Length: 328
Image (cartoon, rainbow, N blue to C red):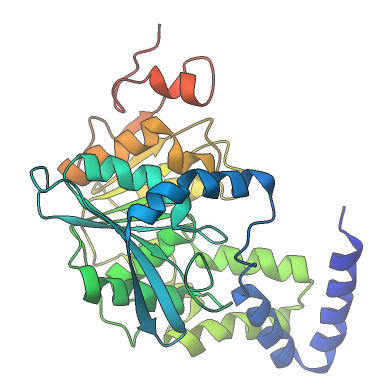
């Protein structure tokens, strides 16, 4: 059932849309781009950030300038005798921050990689309160110019289409930044679906919805229809890994299937039981990412990471290989 706030918001957009669909579309896009407060509100999130604080303090933080302000990168280096000279860019999702990606970074560092975590605009230690694919790609471009080139991109949730757009050169005023391989975790395959979902929540009429979607062309130079994985990566045929949980309640598993359908260069991993957010710190998921980043392949086209009778640390510790079942 819709809350009173949602009902009032929908009513307001209906009135505005009847008077000026264009203004309603512009306001909807402003809301779409508005990032949540940086200070966490939920107890679990505060605890997760507190847990990562010590490791984050050990990282080398750099502030980079973009058109939207400044963005922060956090570099985690391997020991000199373990370093292989390759770097990996890790990009979090909407409403998240690099602190939540520390376990992923540490796993890559253990294999000799230098891991660079990027705080997207309006998140973590970066400035601003505005984020869309254009500003995300500008941030990735800034990280590439400072720390790249990167052997791999790893993107969770909104970070997934962000790294794909960066590799494809989908934002016309930003050059393509193509790594050797890409990993997406719990990522949407079609940004058009996201716009339709928000338009319905706001109660936009057809004309206002079209005006809302036209804002994408204004900031990217391309229509929204181009930000679909099969179109965006049509000419980018590098090894890709799509990891997703069938129990993800925020981004449907069908998105991973759509990503995998673009060609045989994409492998699909089912990480069932880890949902949308826990998935980035799940041990078998991290192991699969590290294996793929290092080799560009996994042992099977579709790998169903087992839970072994339960979720979390016990389940994860039962997995000795991300490509084989080891459950009793």
